Image 1 (cartoon, rainbow, N blue to C red):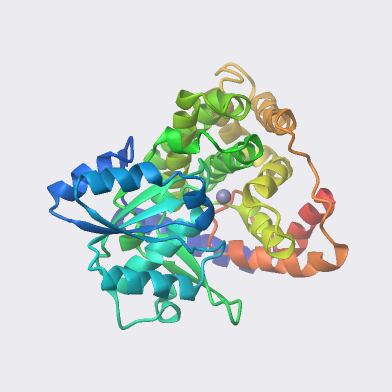
Image 2 (image 1 turned 90 degrees about the vertical axis):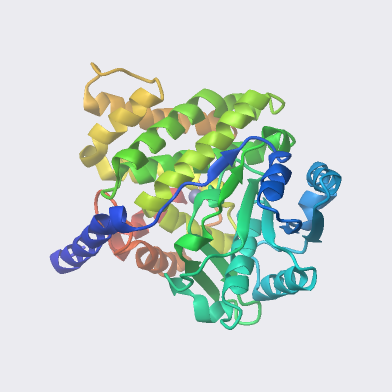
Length: 398
Ligand SMILES: [Zn+2]
């Protein structure tokens, strides 16, 4: 990247970093089980909720316990279970109509990233009934309280239960609208391990590696705070202590619970401190080849860390210490190499490869351009790279 672009990116990032303490970030309050929701609703004198989920989660019977519990507590529950992957404007509008028709007073999102995104957008539409989703796209366009929102993640991965953003797609034009504002952060995150215990090992592995990548990218960037560094280190520790156990022994509820906590902490960290080039490249692969998000991240991250080289050795050593791979006495370079090797080892133990053979050489130019556009100037990465430098990652991955 040339010096002018670099200067522009760094000034942009510096302004955002300076603004962090002034912005109303908050971390959702953690609840341990879905049964806690009814008590909170009763205490707040709310008697009717809209539950947003998808068909597969409902068909697995995961929602039943919550439905029964709300009914026992005389709370009316309306269910919208039509959320699709990459939720659409139609999804949001239909759920909003149901919310209004049944006089709902709060929202519960029960699912993965798509469900959370849909529920957040429903909240935004309730708060701003006159504005459509395209009208609200962008940063800080809501500026108004949305209904009380509970987020119940069904995978330990995305960290969406902690984030400010939602992405909604126009199904006709395929255009994606990103809405980002502080009122969209859920008030409560329900980290109930019993919900994630039936996740298949491959999903546990890839979503768990996504958590690790959130922790790493938010930690090695330039816009960290004392709090986000602590959250990222704690998340890393929890992933190293629990991910492989949750993968091998899905019924281990303590390991599942610790992975949910790791996903939550890493989500809190990257909401404030951002992700980096691994995510930017990974998003393009998901767009072009439907590569699952966590899988792409797990495969790409060692290449990205190796490329940054010496610049991040000190930070990787801190992560390596949290992962219990080395101690203070270990030289930085050695600790950094151990950390990168440990990611490769963890991937291989969980049957995650190290290449993405779907990549077509003809697509690389376009994907690298999109990745550069996503990352620069926003992501405060340790070393800035332009489109041409990012292209190398795609060639490495073939
Ligand atoms: Zn991610």
